[in-house]
Image 1 (cartoon, rainbow, N blue to C red):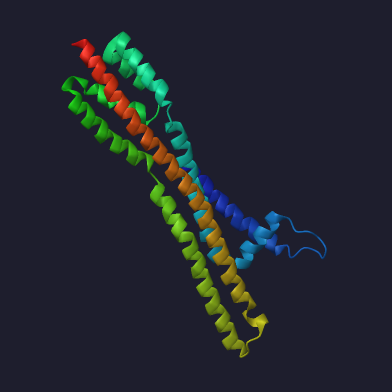
Image 2 (cartoon, rainbow, N blue to C red; image 1 turned 120 degrees about the vertical axis):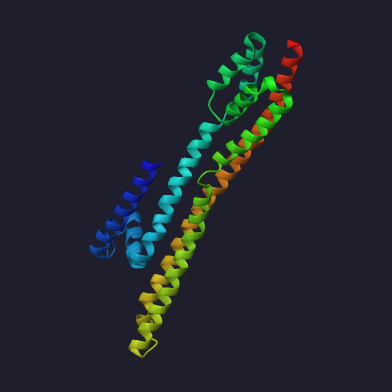
Length: 245
């Protein structure tokens, strides 16, 4: 995660420097088509680096947290049917210790929850169920790690954009007061800053919101799988304990 954050900070600094350098090169010649990346860099400078840099930083850091969560959740996804079948076979052939070994060799929160249940098997099924519920809450908290940060950047990006809008409007009215006239040329600069920062903040929020909803739906799917698998696991363990008596 630290590497992702370092890369995000370096990437943001690069965007700021590159955008400034491209803007210093001046507009394209008449009739020459401006590439999309160059247009974005020019808009970055026109919007004002003091306002645009924090918004872009929200995008980069937000995407870094989103990518980290998506990778973690994909690694946490387990083939539940295969795991339950392996556990049932292990219980029949080698007992509780063999089932524990299967859980140790399987990644993901479901296998960790099953291991905690197997570890409490000697204390009775009631303790197994309590252990599953308690440790399931812990695993759910780990699945939701960094979600508040993503939500913060979703809220912060448009807020920073609106802040740039207000400051741009103040600048426009200040220019009007200094010029003593309502000429469009006088207010164009401040209005441009206001519009660009608002649009950028909203775009950043929309992008992060899409990733946020995907991550939340992924977490809900994993949690539902955990709950269904826990019920099947308790049934399998109960059958094994009944046969062992």
